[in-house]
Image (cartoon, rainbow, N blue to C red; front, side, top):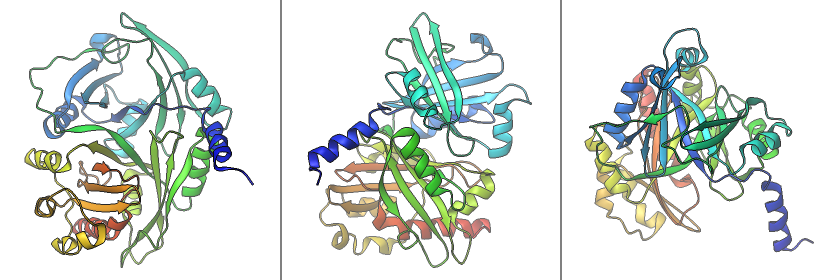
Length: 376
């Protein structure tokens, strides 16, 4: 029988071939990058960071990078039709294209993953400018989404070669968003386990949580989900697939409107969810709301919490507890006209789970929105 230490050592050795330091940035392909960047600055509290386009020698696209604490978003638009960016927006609408992961060695990350079966998106390439050099490489994942491996240990520029500093007179205050907690992918019928195997075999991730249709279901619909995590827990990718139900599930609605598999939502961490959500609401972000009866027995279910129940109730913040502590979370409505991409705001106070106790209330709230759209 293996000792616990031996098991931990074995698990570590299985994940060390792809050491990840966290999410470097999230890139969105959008119809109008200038306007998208302004929206995320005004509504979410990002600051201008960097720009790439014809003025910097990039002829086919324009990209705006914005940052808030350790959270970096990039918005990219095509300058002409008939290229992959324009085709992506036509097919999916404004959407996540790149989940970029920070690594110490981008060439090694590409070699390790492609030799384990990943389809190459970008062979290792070195980019240089006055700020030094960076190396990028990349692989395909579900749908048209890709992972870029970003090595920036020898780079001190504003963002990356090809970009210049973007100075703006309009830089609204932060809303307290800190970093990417996790990113959730929606995949097709019976595709969750194949993608779980992909992350296990190709990237050395492990399945840390599993939710089936008995965990995530309502009277009308259901889905299944498995949470994949890298070895140090810095990168987590839950993967959802539809499950049989009386009516169309939120994952089915997403797949229909997105025209395929893709990133459903990005969870953004905060250190004070009450302050962050209050500010986001004041700036026009709309959130899903659960019935106020959810709060009647909240303390009986989760025990003592530091926050004022009345404040959570007013905002619609959900609470759940696991063996490590508790978490607070809330979900925006879709941020575009297609019912696809949305965001989760999450504050962890010890808890490492994903809010299983909130699933029913949350999904009933989503179904109310689906019904208004005529898609339930």
